[in-house]
Length: 272
Ligand SMILES: [Zn+2]
Image (cartoon, rainbow, N blue to C red):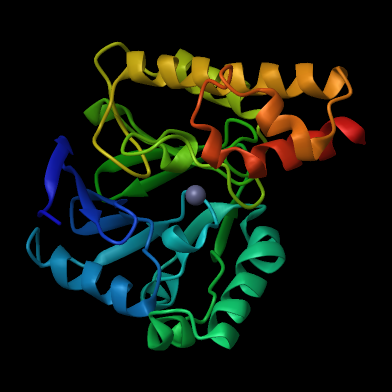
């Protein structure tokens, strides 16, 4: 798509197709932190090439905002530096991304060579609720605020730049995506926690789309909460899972066509 955009002081975002994925870079003295790695080693290598437009300084660390393939399948080209991710990323990779990749390879899904080249590479430094990372002269706070888009979402806070990099907890170019390993009933509380931390003038970089602000985060939280409330209501009313989507027609706070994974995950959570 376009080049690097400086979204905060020394914090850059580049939006890549496919999937309009946000790749972010934090420039510290003497080195770069790369946030997320795209969907394949070829795509990861392309990030590396594009980094030279910013500086000749080396990449010194990588963070995965979560395990989904479009954020982590380029990890192998950054295997020379520490890769940070939440404690539960390896389990998610094993449960969801590994079988999905195997199916794509077996079925010959395009781009065949790119999928065949992926060696799923888990983060090498696992973090829990909080971790403080230094990149040269800069401090980057990693926070896990609860379950939501997955059970392994990390947000990055650059207090010195008033900037947050939040992965897919927030999306701008499309509605929030309920995908593999999502927690639709818990997601609203997690984004509410984020909204409480974000300052009124802070910049929030979503996993897909343009940077947003606290008001946007609050509005998206309201939509996620609306979906969660209706899921609870339909379940409590005894509406069967296969009829829930239609039964809520006209009342869903987000586009109905993306809700099947949310419905099945919520029903499962409510039934156990
Ligand atoms: Zn995701």
